[in-house]
Length: 197
Image (cartoon, rainbow, N blue to C red; front, side, top):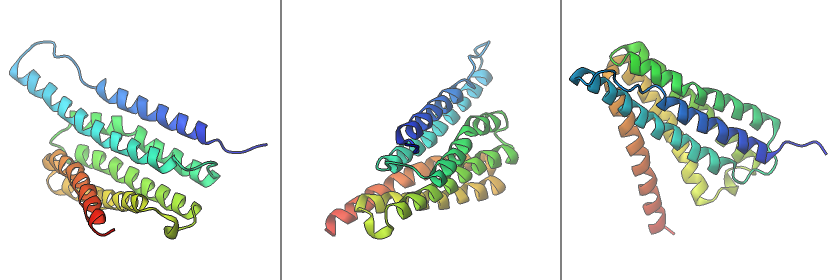
């Protein structure tokens, strides 16, 4: 009679992702006057929004794949999912903080820290789902690829923190390269797998 609902888990998760993606764009103001400085500031906010949108969208893709086969989520999975979503909800704040303090180490560290926390909890979620499915032996080739991807994302987000501490003004470039690198890694694993089947 009483059980955890997969559809409710997915529903609230999708709702939170939608709100987060929407909130980030609200930080972009239309300049009161069109000047070079105001257009540069607006351009910076748009760039930051696009990168943040790409990061959060990537998380949504992983999330929907992860929970696709779960019929009845465990309490532990629900709790970790809410922790994950809580960190996802910090993304608009971290984006706004970095937008307002683009050259400051604290702004870059805040943004990188939120990404690292999301990646760490996402990795834990993947481990929990793999364990619930019967372990590594039950994984398909695609599942292994996605799991490697989450591990790679966690490592890359650790690099974001280091970059934030050393050269904070390069963080967005490194994040864009990280997104690109993750895409290339996926492509290479798929090509390698196709040649070794």
